[in-house]
Image 1 (cartoon, rainbow, N blue to C red):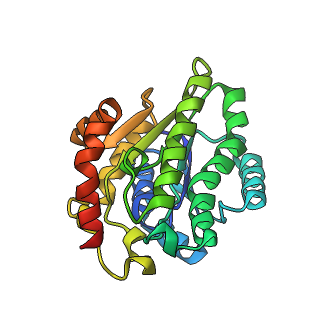
Image 2: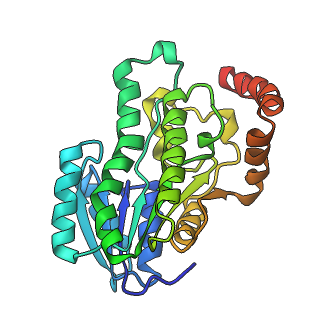
Length: 264
């Protein structure tokens, strides 16, 4: 883990799972202030109580899918701190089920948080980073940004979009002093699968789920990295490389596997 002495960090989706662990780890690695963002103030305060007391834990309830809420948050925080060193766009969720059985509103809600929420937060803090010629944006996506998984179409779409947006911005930021890196893990043991749409069951493809601490370490590595994407665990990079290099071959193999696991 890298040191973040004196740095100011914002983490969205900080009330549980990956965001919760990242907040704790940043606080234990020198960050001066960590801003905890999510809808639940109560859960954020519980996370703040677990952080290193040497770090200033700032609880900021905000619905990042609401553009006006994000604008107000950025104005408040930039007035208070003047700048942000690291923005971790981690908030996200998924709804499990076939597209034909989901409402448009359900798919919109996934996209609004996972994709537009990331855009709102990025836009809100990017100019201040560019003025200082310093800062890093970490977007937490998923290996689902490279593989379309049946039952999670809206979620996969939001992560494909996140990776594409980040890649374009990565090129735009070249030489600016500001970086952007995507962290793409396989399934993680978080509240993600507690959404009622999963019916209390973990899909078969989650049998190799990661611990949040593993992804948190990747987030901290990403915050000091010039790479566009960090895939967790590292050996999954081979599968992603094959998917992009030989998509027809990989889809022919992966498709039946995904479909079989989806229906079991």
